[in-house]
Every structure is written in structure tokens, then in C-alpha cells.
Amino acid sequence: MTDRPFAGRSVAVTGASGFVGGAVAAALLAQGAQVRALVRSDAAGRTAAALGAAPVRGDLEDHDALRDLMHGCDLVVHVAGVNAGCIRDPAPMYRVNVRGPAAVIEAAAAAGVARVVHTSSAAAVAEPPGSIGREDTEPTGRFATHYARSKYLGERAAFEAGRRTGVEVVCVGPSSVQGPGRIGGTAKLLLRVARADTAVLTRTWLSVVDVADCAAGHLLAARHGLAGERYLLSGASLSTEEALSLLRRVTGRPRRVVWIPRAVVRAVAPLTALAALVGSTDPPLCPGMVHTLLHGHRYDGSRATRDLGLIYTPAEQTLRRAIAWYAARGMLGGAGPA
Image (cartoon, rainbow, N blue to C red; front, side, top):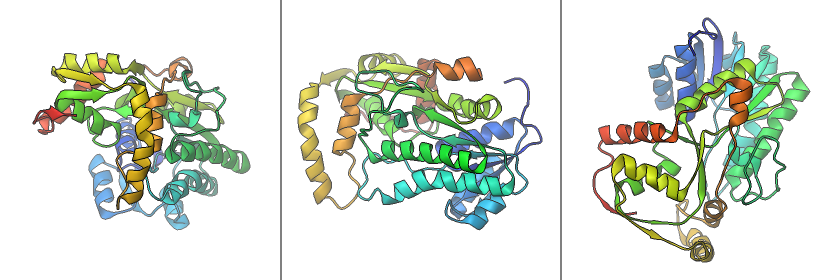
């Protein structure tokens, strides 16, 4: 963007201490906005303040904090949420991801804020296996993980709250967000494979969006998005082989790959359920994650380009930026199996 459409505007952001929320807050600040950030801890407050945002202490269940956060603002960007693939007790995630959007939109209505951009997820599309997910895809009603279900329900709650209160609600649904600063979720897999001499992989599909494009998509949705509509943010869909080729071109690793048949991965799913039962912490692998892996995801993010003007970064450029960030922090040392 060459202009500064947010200059002088006051914007409330939830989740600004996180990976995506921080990128959104930084993009708004770069456009000249004054950003107020909801934070749950002193550490989160320091993170938000380091970006240049004004921290407001509270959480999504604190109505007074939400009121203070949005006072004098003319836009709210609701990014805060819980993202966990394998979780023993999903109730807190449902509380944040489903109840949170309605609470934010109701607070926005009370504060006189006319528009809210809600960060959903491409996983909320729940596309049939083997298909390409789009904004108008009819959901199957079957969700591999509690996270996907919670984001679907949260998106519905957001739109319903918008209709009830008269607030304009626009949803954006990012696919897997990657780039400098991402160390959790699927980035853990990327790091393991990028460090490996030998990687054990199975064939599937994944869709990714650069974190800078994700932030830009939020701002464009705030400016141009239609109320009551969703926009998927996804720059590329890659097969495992394509992703592996990109990684080898950038890092030279992994040098060797062992391909595991999908039938073998499917057979492992019950064992992951047993491991989850006997463990004392949230397991790194569970049946939902195995099903997600086998399902794979391909999303069509072209509507955000056509209707909002979003230009995506090539996947190789995203990967190079991420790898450079990891290398600068010594996170790529030590080869071994992944």
C-alpha cells in the first residue's frame, strides 16, 4: 500500500501480542493508526507496547476492559483466539473461540464502533476431502479437530452478533500462516524437517499464507470487505513433494526422505488416542491431527485478490524469509531425523 488510509484512526486490536495479531497491529501502526491492544498479562503488555500499541489489561470475558479498549475507536480487529490441534480439555478453547467473537461485537456496538474484522480460519470451511475450499463451500459438518469446529462456530456467532447489533462484521479466514517469527504449530514441523538429514513424510496437501499478506488482508477487509462476508487468505497450495522441493532449494535439507504410505499413517491414529489417554499433558499427536494430515487442505484465496486487492507473496519467498529468521537465531543447527 502506498497511501495511509488508517492515518489518524483509532483501532482496537485483540490478540496483538500473538503472531498474527502482532503483524496486524504493526501493519496498522505503519499506516499511521493509533492502536489500542487488549492484553492478558504484563508480558503481553510489554510485547504490544514494543510494537507501539497502547496496552489495555483484560480478557474477552471482561466487559469493562472491552469497553475501555474500544472507547473512542472507529474500528475493531478481533484476532485473539486459541489454536491447538491436540488438547485434553477443549472447553477453554470453545469459550474463547466461540463466545469471544460475540462478546467483542456486542462491546463494539455498545461503544458505537460500526465495523469489526473478525479473524476466523480457513479450517472453518470444512471442505469435503479432495476438494478445494472456497468461501461458498458447503461445510460437511465433520471437523477433524476441536479447533476447526470452534472456529466454524465462532464465525457463525460473529455474523449472528453482527446482525443482532447492527455492527458490520467482516470475516477473514487465513490458511496456515507462515513467515518470520512463527515458531509454533506447523512451523515446528518446518523446523524439524529443515534441520533433518532424513525426514519421514507422507503425501498430503497444505495451504499457506505469508504473515505479511495475512496482515494486509485484514486491513484490506477493513476497508473494502462486505459486511456479512468471509474472505479466505491463502497464497499457495502445495503438495508435500512441492513443499519438499522448495525446502531443499532453500536449505539443502533433508538429504533423504522416507515416504510413509497413507494407510500406515491411518493405522497409527488409534495408537495416538491411547497415547493421549495415558499422558499427563496435551499430546503432540492425536487422531484429529492424523485425520487433518490425511485430509490435507487446499484453499482458494483468489477472492481476496479480486475483491480486496490483496497481492500474495510467492511461497518460496515466504520460506526464504522464515528460514533466514530461524538461521539468524541459531534455530537450524543440529542435523538428525525428523
